[in-house]
Structure formats: C-alpha cells, structure tokens
Image (cartoon, rainbow, N blue to C red):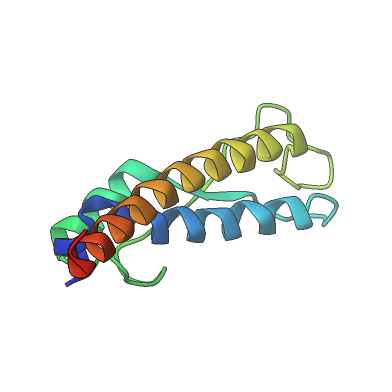
Length: 117
C-alpha cells in the first residue's frame, strides 16, 4: 500500500534511515581498535527493495552491509576515517530531508484531496 501512495520515496526514506544508523555506528566506534567501518550501497539496496516489493523491510535479507576501504588505515586495525564518515552522514542527512519533504508533500496532497480542497 505504501508503495502505491509514496512510490520510491517510502523505501528510500527507510533505507536512508538505516544508512544513517550504520554511519552513526561507524562514528561512535572511531576509536575502537579493530573496528571495521561499514556502509550501505544505497542504489543497489534500493533497487533490491523495490524489486522484492518490500519497501519497508529491515536490514536483514536484501540489504547488504559493505565494508569501507580506508584510504589511510590506522595501526590498530580500525578502518573508520572520521572526516569521511562525517561527510557521508551529512550527505545522507540532506538526502533524507529531501526524501522526507517529498513524502510530506504527498501526504499533504492526499489530505487536501480527502478534505475536498
């Protein structure tokens, strides 16, 4: 039902939210020895969700977490590069906000239609 109402935006919003959690986990573990930074490759993950017809599915199954390849690995085995993670978090937050605006606009349109405006 949500796919018919919100199109790609419902699945994108859910996936962006999950990606934000993964990036936040990377940032939180920036000083943890041996921690491997992970991320979601957004476009293939979104394609997989839409192909499976599960726009609001969780991180299990079709969404694969990938390890990041560090440009400058640390001596303790941690692959989190804080600057890179902060940029990824900011970009994802902007995309999340834009997607949320599309969903909110759709909800407003439906609400106005139901009220007869």
